[in-house]
Length: 135
Image (cartoon, rainbow, N blue to C red; front, top):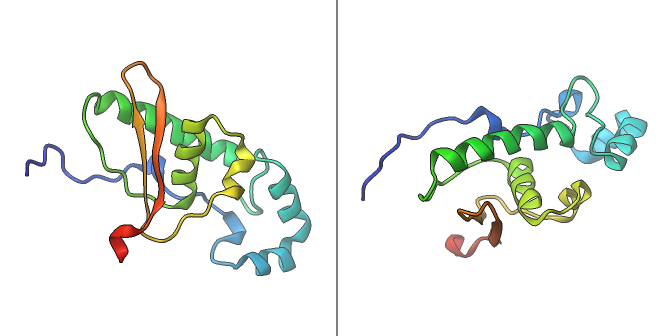
């Protein structure tokens, strides 16, 4: 096995900043910030209360990182390990799906999803939420 690159942190693939909602359950957010939560669920442009990131902002950050990594690893395979929203965003963008599709995807802990990017720039979702390696 040959490892060409060392493991490194890619800030652009960090999880969404949920602001004041960080660490709260969905029920707690609904109880404390009901109107804000409804607005957030209705629009990808709305950020969580207290300085969080909107899904539009996350998509811009993840897209820029994806584009940089595609260029840096052209013709090679790269393994990315990240959290739920960046993974769902990469999948959504590969499919050309609308932002609300983020709410329609389920990802299990330690699941594997695979997106291939071809030389012509077209992506292909090859695997989503696979957990067979955990059995």
